Image 1 (cartoon, helix red, strand yellow):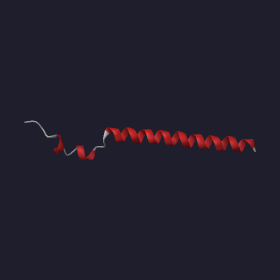
Image 2 (cartoon, rainbow, N blue to C red; image 1 turned 30 degrees about the vertical axis):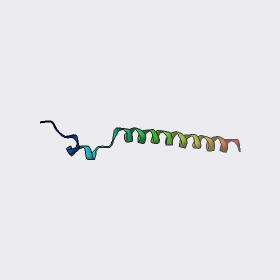
Image 3 (cartoon, rainbow, N blue to C red; image 1 turned 180 degrees about the vertical axis):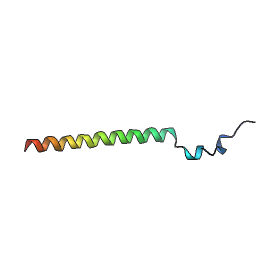
Length: 48
């Protein structure tokens, strides 16, 4: 007999691969944006 993937109890607890990739991409992009803002404020504070 072959197993039905819809009755796999582990599948309900695992995140879809696309969601994990999107989460990692958002985290990286958010940190890059925060670093850019930090750099802007740091450079701006040095000029005054």
